[in-house]
Length: 185
Image: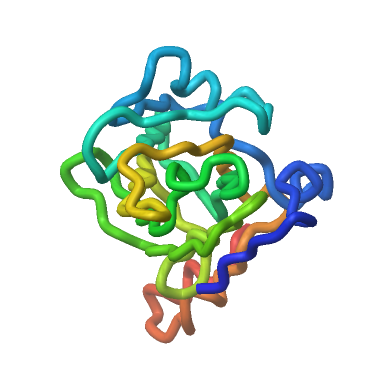
């Protein structure tokens, strides 16, 4: 896994390039806990000045549920250690599945004093984007053993129609039954 971080990293520039689109607005978002006035609205308002603040025991969870199976290629998380210090996540787990009861961990990311966007690629075994009904972002630990967490923004990207993946990535079609599906008419 190659997590990208840095001040120059910007999810909106990737969206403007036309290769990905933000699909988080199509989902239902929920949190394991939050302080009043520091919830989902602040996490999704496109402002780096506002943030979600958890209120309770670790792990802190962000649940993103899509109404239909959705292709997800990357998740962008904005954190700022300089402003949030012990509230900044240091270890994050990304889980995918169809609902709360069958989530599988697909990535674990260790962050070292992040300041800006962190891009986490979401890939299946064959390095293709994940198709899922639900994503759960779990904050496992914070810097300086902090109890509550701050996340300033989260954006979820899906590849656009022009960046579909060819059937060849699924391997050779060797049987007669499979060969009938090797091209799309």
